[in-house]
Image (cartoon, rainbow, N blue to C red; front, side, top):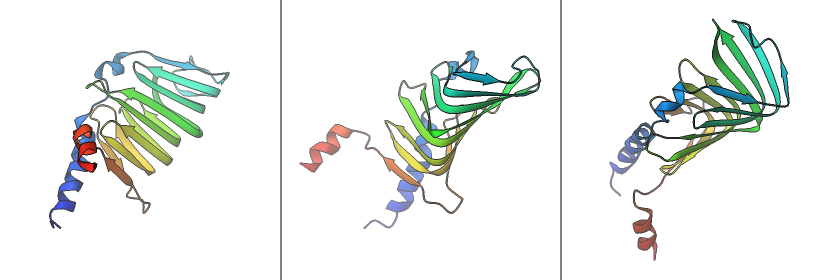
Length: 171
């Protein structure tokens, strides 16, 4: 076995997520929140509003579903969104036209930083592969993902560049 193969695969795994970036225009779209209940003062410049019951949040191509969502306002802007569910889901189109899908027990969206943190049995899937574990930090601006580091296992599956050729080789 090629002794450099594991190092090469690790390098590929690190570079692949950065190759696909979240749809750039999403950051300039309004955020829409639908739910069955809302509690708190949404007009306050600073504070928290809780949405519950079949929560759906959209911003451009970003679509998130959860049982509850806490929206934190800071200086009149949405600062972060904390979602809980069994399981909360997110989907976003990438600049290359592909779609990224994610599920987790909890999702935190830091709006200004354009960071999504998935915790608790998360899984992220794209045409390039999958990544699953207990915690992932996803930068929607750069496409960079960081997983693990907390002692739990992370599983990454990288799809072949040409799936048709790979299936032919198996025959």
